[in-house]
Length: 91
Image 1 (cartoon, helix red, strand yellow):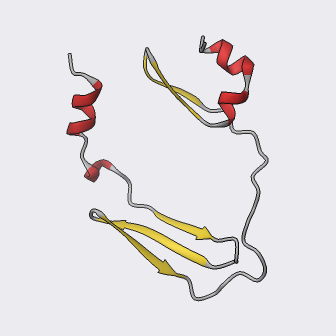
Image 2 (cartoon, helix red, strand yellow):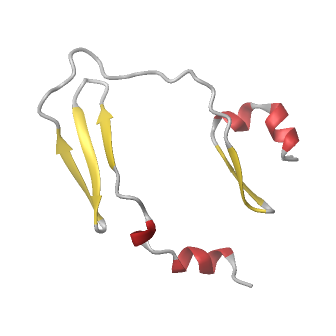
């Protein structure tokens, strides 16, 4: 039986989906972050958003997944929801 540490060591970056992340700073500056190989490439978008760029997320995100029978992964909102914690027997 493989341990979790062995699974992590054997994981390949090639299995990851290529992703570009668009970030808007508090000042309204837009940045695009892209992973290329082992390096993070940061590009500045030409058009800056007028005004501030901060958008507060007030929506509830209750996501919990069982990675292993003894290991749960969850969103930050799930950590504050007592019913969700009780449902998954988190103490």
